[in-house]
Amino acid sequence: MTLRELRQQSKKTAAQVAEVLGVAERTVARYEQGIRRLNIEQVIPLAELFDVSEREVIEAQITTIKNQKSVLPIM
Image (cartoon, rainbow, N blue to C red; front, side):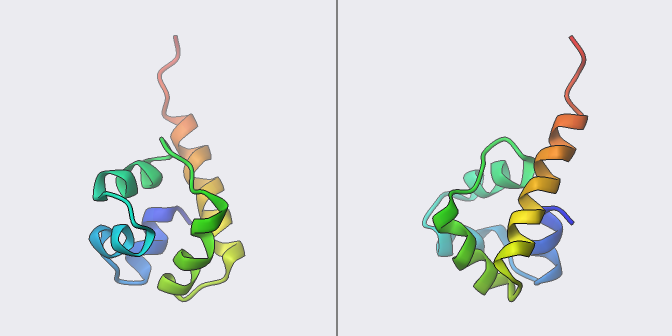
């Protein structure tokens, strides 16, 4: 499961995530695209917001990054 899927499963908006993390919605989009990485300090608030374990948030981040790398164009 990706970060976006985790957010959607919990029925939260990107705006709600941005507010909890103290970042812009665009930053949340970049987390969900695998362009930016979560800081370790952001894992617990996200886990609480999504009502999942910290491990699930970390695994979602890893899946997001792997998916992002798999769609990069070959140079």
